Image (cartoon, rainbow, N blue to C red; front, side, top):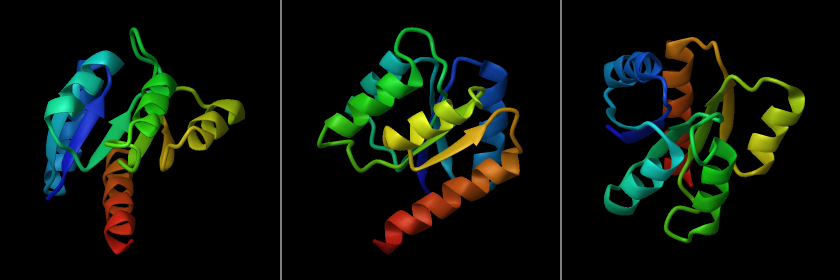
Length: 125
């Protein structure tokens, strides 16, 4: 079982992701924006983050940059889950340090599989 932080301001989407990830045996924490996600990470350890690209306040790319610049979170796996689907958005997320990028709308089971695969790759290192 892994602890997954889902960062998204859409409550219905968070619940959909929570249901799918919990069915895969994961514990899910949630934050509605980037600032609260960073605050939560300062006190709660997680194994992987599912991060929206479009957030109030700090957007997903800024959150990702801050995570990668902090030695405590630099290696934390991050899967971007965003409605931003243009090539520059996907490449921007990946080049900023995201481990994976999934475009909304998405298949919840696919996200759960990607979380599992990301965790398996990290465990194998």
